Image (cartoon, rainbow, N blue to C red; front, side):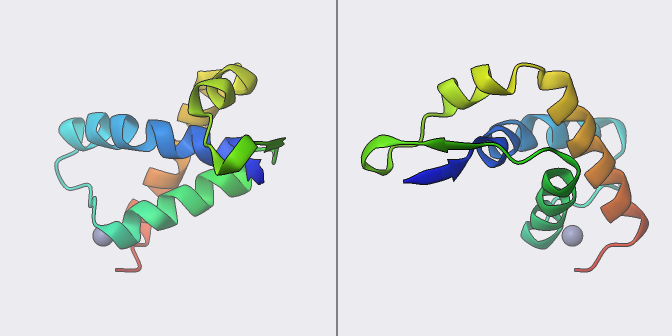
Length: 90
Ligand SMILES: [Zn+2]
């Protein structure tokens, strides 16, 4: 099965980055709709990279290694958080 490993990487890091940001900015919304909007914005700014996984297994660790720079993913998530904060759609 095909998986976009950037999606895996964003899913993996979203909670940590969002929790950390919300701690410093208590007015940050973390509802499911905002989380999805943040993911969509982050993924649209990151390159798409497909990997083939066996039996539908999700190889998050492999995906993380392939991403290389976590900083790039974190920056994209933060960009998404700020965009959603400025114009929430929930
Ligand atoms: Zn919200």
